[in-house]
Each structure stands twice: as structure tokens, then as C-alpha cells.
Amino acid sequence: MNQILVTGSLHYDILIAAHHRPEKGETVIGSGCAYKFGGKGGNQAISAARAGAAVRFAGAVGADSQGEFLLAELRRNGVDTQHVAVEQGVPSGMSVAIQDASGDYGAVVVSSANNHISPLIFSQDALWQQVSMLVLQNEVPEAVNLAAARAARQRGIPVCINAAPARLLSGELLDCLDVLVVNAVEARDMCGIVVDSLADAMRAAVSLTEHCRAVVVTAGEHGVAWCEAGQAAGSLAAIKVELVSTHGAGDCFMGMLCASLLRGETLAESLTRANQAAAEHVSRPAV
Image (cartoon, rainbow, N blue to C red; front, side, top):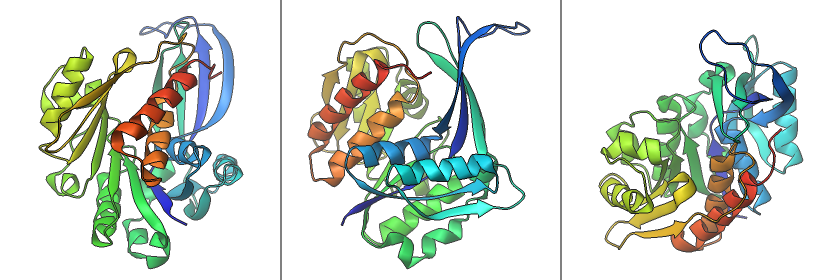
């Protein structure tokens, strides 16, 4: 069976609801708290599995109760965890997010065990058996992403990266990519185009095909745009729903996108599915 290999972060998330996010020096009384599975890598792996894909994960957790929770949640959703290392003496990654009354949020991430993923794991042939797609994000060191991308390229396996959070990608990593997915801020940082509309997102997608043959730019409430090298750009308007929470929406989008591409659907068809999945996600409470 064709599989997606996801490598990236695993975080034990503490999600707090409050009327607003605190200003400097301010204490805010919260209205709710939840303890959740998180990390862009883990969230995208589970999202892809829920969308019907067979998924394998490569990463690291600490030898602690949080790590046990993260592994159990991956397994509960059918994700293969044979290649997740349990690091002694290192805490599992975690984040604290505050969601305000409008449904928007901000977060602080502490990587911990995620910084201990060994690039050497990607030289193991067993890791790549039946893998037909590699999915990356920017919450682990670039050395990890580069080692994974090089190994995938050597085996003729396409590489998709959700370049979030924003950081400079090396030319060597960009040369290994087949699909680049960025949001408005990340697109602006990579190509200098401010994305305030779908038209802007399409311009940014076209510009970024200089670095990658297929580019997707998500533009929040405006929708999503894409371009494949040598073809005309396309776009989809956001589906109108009542916004409840944006927490995890991008990871939901990525999971559905990659699962659909794995099934052989076109980029446009896959983005239609991902756009719908993200709309449904933001209409549900996160806490």
C-alpha cells in the first residue's frame, strides 16, 4: 500500500480560551482549558490518516507521560510509530496556545525532543518501504528536513513541505521540493508580495514557482491560490462558515491535500477537498 511519510514535530498542547490575549504585563482570566495532541507534523499525520491515507511518522518524543500520550494518539489514529524515537533525559515538545473570543489564537512552542531527531534515520531503507510521498514542515531543524528530502529525492519520492513557521529555506532544500505550501505571511517573506487578496495570492504562487514546480498559497478568509510551473494559476474562494476556531486549520488542510494527492487526484481537485476540510474544521470548537 502506498504510504505518506511525515517527519516533523510532536507537541503536547495546552490550549487556553480567554476573552483576549494578554498585553505585556497583563493577567487575563481564562474561560477554558484543554490538553491536546499537537505539533504540525503530528497534526498533519493524523489529518492525512483520517482522510484515508496510510501514514508513517518519523520523529522523537521524551521518555515522559506526555510522550506516551503523543504516541498513543498517533497509534489510535492508525499512524505507524515504529520510527518515533523515545529520548531519555529530554522532555517531549510542548506548546501553550491562547484562543481569543474571535476564534483566533497565538502560541508559544518549546521544541525539546523535536530537536533531537537524528538525520541518520533517513538512511534506513526500512523507513522508506511503500512510501510514495514525504511531508515536511518547519518546526524541526532544517538539517532534519534536508536529510529527509535528500533521501526521498534519491528514491524518486515526491516531497511536499508546509513551510511553517516562516524561515529561510536553503537553496539545497528548495531543489528537493515538489510541492510548496505557504500562508500569506510565509509567501510574503519568501517572494516579497504582500498577500491581501486572492489575486495577490495568485501572483505570489506564480512568483514562487521559480523555486518549486508546484506552489500553494493559503490566504485565510480569502481562500487559496496555486500555480504549477508552466501552467496558469488557479484559485478557490474560501467557503463561508461561521468561524469558531482557527486552531489547527492549516494542518487539517495539509492532511487532506496530501491524502488526495496520494490517491492520484490533481492539485486542483486535491485543493478543493482541502478547502472544504479546512472550512469544516474552523466551524468547530477547539477547546
